[in-house]
Length: 555
Image (tube, rainbow, N blue to C red; front, side, top):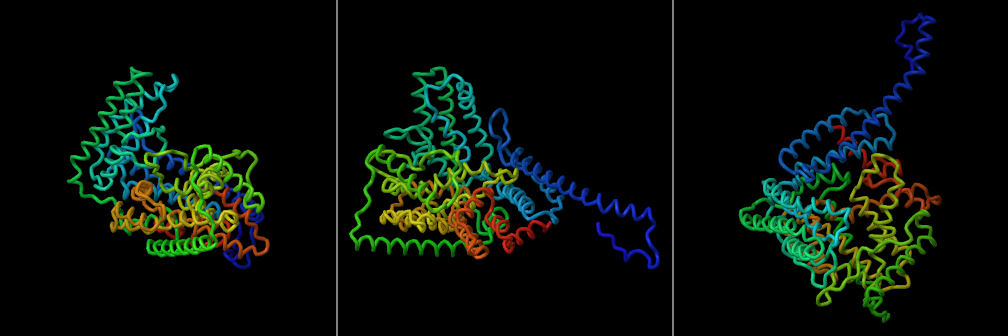
């Protein structure tokens, strides 16, 4: 405590007792203030956990509850928690603590955006398909200790389908069409289904497949499975009968998109900025592909041969991981803890499809396994998720910012190219440029979809026309996600750009003492938080974060 002696009348001195009191307060008050700060931070931690729970659906008899009363209750609770957050004074906190304060602010905004703008519970029929589509993928026979859980899941299917009919008060026609498609057709990509030489046609056919398997091993479950099948068929018919009367759009518009970028993603860009950056990066990688292909053609470099069997493909993936780990070790690109798994799964599994068809990632991966293994496995998503256990901060441990997650996985693709992973495999460099072209093209088409300028089919046609190896199934699979989850498609490229800016800032700051591996280690253990906040913490530069801090304090 600093005592302002000017406020005492001239010529007077403090009485001895007053001097004792002032001395006592000068010691005690900082402790009290510190204790209050600690209490406020604990309040923030507790508040964040309440918000984490609020983000998930409540349940009634084990079924997720997306009813209007449940959503209204969620809105009321969100406002209560927002007021609690606003009551916390974080002005004197450290930079790291202020970042945590902004993370809670962004989570509040994310929940608000879901309730106010996206409204999947009332607009997106696919939400309810997602709740039941994986049930028939179950391995049969079912272990005894899992039977009751599986029985309950089957019993809940009709409840979910009936709830959907009540909740969908404003279904978007395009999203309803996608839901019907998933119910009736195989998506051509496959996401966790058991292998079939001829895949069942959509969720409805998978329930028929399940009934056939249950007849042999669990005949007592067949009636429940038939009821589940009837429920999903009834839901399909209900949607189809109303499709022509649905007038709500699937897109959210530029104003909402910009709000999400600033208030949730905490990105220092607008939709116009994203379009410009996406076009620039697409042109750069398209040009690099043309130059690389010309070089390889002129030098007579043979084309890459497709793997012809699962054994060959698996061997290639293991070799790709060896190359990745060797380069990491040789150039000290990052630290790999001793308890890291010895190998990671790949994201594009071996499969054979009717007519020899391959989707986009299979075309790339079956030629060379490096690109997607870097992005999705090591040091990409799987390794990145493994490193989360080193995030001790209780708020950051709950964060999953798409720009940070996908930005890292996209950044390392080009980083490994520059580090020399392709020096001895020149044709594989072309595959990296193609993958990056695809990620850049997403920015334009996601924005055009969310503006209402492109339908999903038009966006897919654009993707197929502009990206080598692209085909309709993988394109549709990706684009559906970006239509239903606004701003996620652009997170790959924009996060990469932010990360490169952060890297450049640190190189300039540290000069000859900069260490690339140490930079990557710091990033990987800081949590999945917006890169604008990481930049503030790692560099001390707050030109981006300041605007978010100011936004947060406009009560």
